Amino acid sequence: MPYRTEAIPGGLFAVKREHFWGLKGYDSEFQLWGFENLEMSLKEWMCGGMLVVVPCSMVEHVHREKWPFGEEGSHQSNHNRNRVISTWVTEPWRSELFRNLGVELEEQKSLFAETAARRRELSELQCNNFDWYLTNVDTSFNEELPSHLSEKLQKLKQLSLSSW
Image (cartoon, rainbow, N blue to C red; front, side, top):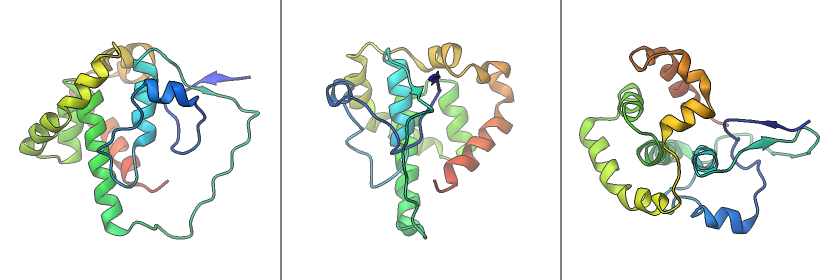
């Protein structure tokens, strides 16, 4: 029986080409690897769609024996993560995430300026904001107040640093 999910793993989803490009595709400023799945997940939900897992579907993912991207791959993944946060996450969540990830205030301001064109492009789609996502999709965040997010955000940080 198919069921809804808040987010999808990278590289393991199917979408019609027209729909993907109708949502403006991936962020063209993404580098090499990382966080495309989170951007696509947030975008799908916040712009009127939904994500569904179909348990009877079969997907194979071949894992590499070693991380192919080296230290530079981690840096580029962090770049993509920060662009997703700056583009899709609203305050106070954005500042709290960046603070817990150790992103300096000046870098946050720079990221916000760099992603302005992307946010304008996506506003044309009349997407809902991050508060809507937390209220209607990932309701687990509503169990805690923003001032008590540190433990949950530390877990997110650990997940973001792990290789898939």
